[in-house]
Amino acid sequence: MTVTEQSRRTAKAPRTTRTRRTAKATAPAWQPRTDPAPLLPEVEPHRVLGTGAKLDPELMSGLYAELVRGRRYNQQATALTKQGRLAVYPSTTGQEACEIAAAKVLRDQDWLFPSYRDTLAAVARGLDPVQALTLLRGDWHSGYDPRECRIAPLSTPLATQLPHAVGLAHAARLKGDDVVALAMVGDGGTSEGDFHEALNFAAVWQAPVVFLVQNNGYAISVPLEKQTAAPTLAHKGVGYGIPGRLVDGNDVAAVYEVLAEAVERARSGGGPTLVEAVTYRMDAHTNADDATRYREDAEVEAWRAHDPVALLERELTERGMLDEAGIEAARAAAEEMAAALRERMNEDAVLDPMDLFAHVYEERTTQLREQERLLRAELEAAEADASEGDQH
Image (tube, rainbow, N blue to C red):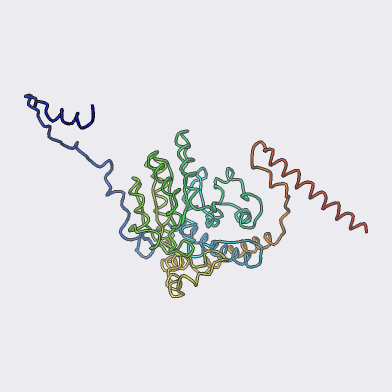
C-alpha cells in the first residue's frame, strides 16, 4: 500500500462517536530554588577607612607594618628584575592591601591558592621571600614545599588554581577537617572557563572556599569593559548561587573585614563566597610590559592618591594610633627585609641539570630515562673536555 492510498483510507474512515475531552494544559508551580536578593553584592564598594568605624589598634598596627614591608618587597623585587636576578616580576604595587589581608585572615591549617602575581601574599603568610621568588628566577619547580606552608604552587596559567582550591576544600569537608581554602585570581582570570567551573562546583558542593578577585582594571592591556558586561565581577557569583561581596581593594581594613566574614562563613558550613576587591596595578603588568601604550599617566596618578599604604598611615595618624616612631620602625624593618633579600638573591644558585627528570613521574617512562641518559652523557663529555683543557 502506498503512502497516498493509506492517506486516502484514513481520510475516508468513519469518525468515532466517543467524546474526547481536551485536558487544559497547566504548568506546574515554579519557585526559584534560591532567593537571589541575599546573593547580590553591595551597590558601592564596602569601605572602613574614613567612615569613623571602630578599628582594632593591634590588628591595624600589624597590617600597617605588613603594608610597608609589602611595598618595599615589591620595590626590591622590581629592582632585582632590572638587575637580571629575576627573569620576570609581576608587581603588586598598589594592590598590597588585598595581598596582605588575604594572607592574614587565614589560620595555620588553612590553604592559600595564589596566582603568579601573588608572591607578596605568600610572603605575608610566612613564606621565605627567596623561596617565593624562586619560580620567577627560573630555578627549580616551585621553590617551596606546598604542604609545609599550606600555599599551593604559584600558578602562571590563568585561573587553573581555582578548581584545585575547590577540590581541596571539598575533600577537607568530607574528611571533617577544619580547613578553608582562599583562592586568588585577577579580573582577567574571571574570563577563563576554570573560573566558572570552580564556582559551579563550589556552590553545588558547598565547599569551604573563598574566591578573591583582585580587579586591578586590566588583564595585561585589556580593560575590564572589554572583558565583561556584568555590573560588577561580584555579580558573577549570583548565577551559581554564591553570594558576592564588593569591597574597596585599597582599604586594607575593609578587605580584611570582608574576607574574615567570608572565611568564617565557609568554616561554619555556609559555603563559598565571591569577593571582588576594586584596586589598581600602579606598575606595569610585568617588566616586559609597556603600560603607557594602553593607559594614561593621569589615570595612574589618580589612583596614587588612593594608595593603600598612605590611606592606612593617614587614618592611623589622625586617630592617634600611629606616630612618627611607629612609621620609622615599620620602614626600618622593611629595609632590613629588603637588604637580606637583595644579598641572598645576588648569590648564584647551584643548579643540577638532572633535576629536570626528578618529580615528573613516580616511575620514569622509557622516553624520560633515555633523555636522562643522553643528558648525563653530554655533561660527562663536557666535564672530560674541560679537564683535558686544564691539563694542557
